[in-house]
Length: 298
Image (cartoon, rainbow, N blue to C red; front, top):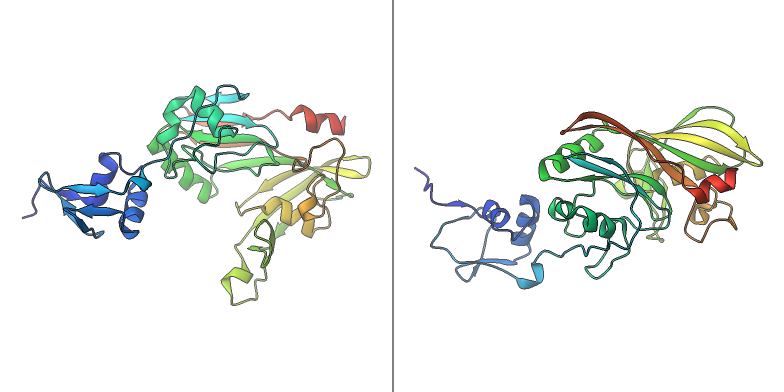
């Protein structure tokens, strides 16, 4: 019979606050940062009240510093999910504990409960990311159950997203782009269209599908409605550039520079998201086009 006074080590680390999730707890053990009674632990171990568990101090959970001075436009709020309209040019989350000028710093100042929801300490309950230069709807979970449920929904393609982008040239018809996305071999900041015939997974890339549809022409540009069916890094930017229609301001992928937009900001905005909130059921949220982008097309 198993000793009911004992519990799995990863469960213990989560329950006592040493790790935000079982996955993180298991990573701590694999990295040799957890000791039981003075010796290095194994993933398969169980611990009881008589055991002394030590976790390296360098592994203590980092904290997202709240910053109430940052503007935060909340476009949806319920007991499970917050949706904010991310400004263009602002990072989604800090990369180190002393960074304070990101969306999550502003969110934590207003909703402290999201800080410890997710698996990565400096991301909190952030459910997805937008590139720094992109603006629009950003989803944040308020509890662990919602985080897991909606992350699974994102991976399975059950959360609908619609972007708008202003691109170079004229796009005449609705098009589905179905080409994989891979990492650039020499530029860590950049992605490329993958080679599906390659036997090297890094060159072949990840499957990526984007549906683009013209809304209207704007001088020598086209305003597009975009529905990504997958979520690869820089997917929309790479796919549009591969069509010969890079996004205005996105100079990394050959887009025309704009005097109206600061360096690093481009005309790409996540307008609409639709998802099922555990608290209130089906939700559709619209993030208004920000002034800097609207001014250009006006």
